[in-house]
Length: 265
Image (tube, rainbow, N blue to C red; front, side, top):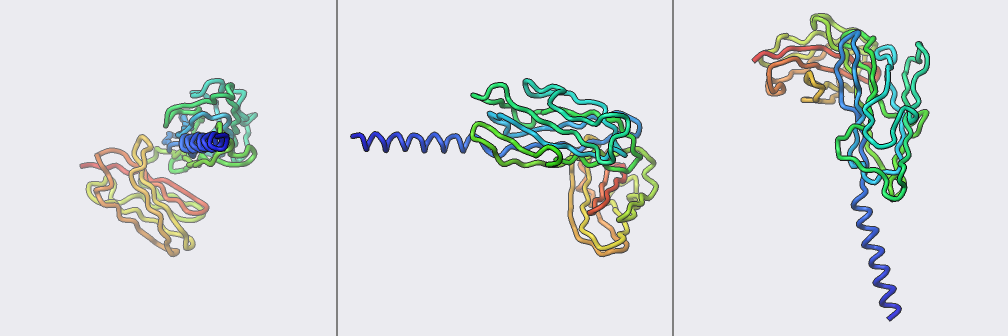
């Protein structure tokens, strides 16, 4: 009888552990892409998913301080987050690679803290000091604060998806020169059918073309290896769901730039 009771107890523990393992999965943290005008404020959101019974969260966010100037933190989406949970740039001359660090521990270590998927954890406010076509990454990093999440089961695995702030404006008729490539204006522009994305690489490189709408929603992305020299992407009209303003971002290993295009149906 004792042996049977022990087996039942063991089975119950296994079932409970399996239930916990199923409930507490991989947490996701991400920053949606943002478009900002030169000289204007812009808000970068940090969102989470599968943030269930969390006990702690910490990470570093990096950005290009030649394009963005930090101005504040806000939109706290979890109980007991405040300005004291952050390490932020000090003084009027931050380093070239701006850094915002975040460290949070739940008040209730019995239940932890849960929020709905796509909830805003917090936001960072910037002033756009870069010029049209420039892009600042919003990069999740382990330095100086480690990227780490924990819930009632202990430290857990995570997905972290970087964001970006693209500086809009300009006439969309000038080429953009970077250390890796020359990015020519989209042709034709306005776009009525297909669009040609033309560029010239200084050296052979893996490139990524990302197209997003005025709200920052990505509608097309393609990664491809190109030889050095003049190249072209052809975007069919099906890429663009409606008339309006869109942005094409070209990214290589060391540089990225954006061209604006207008679609007319």
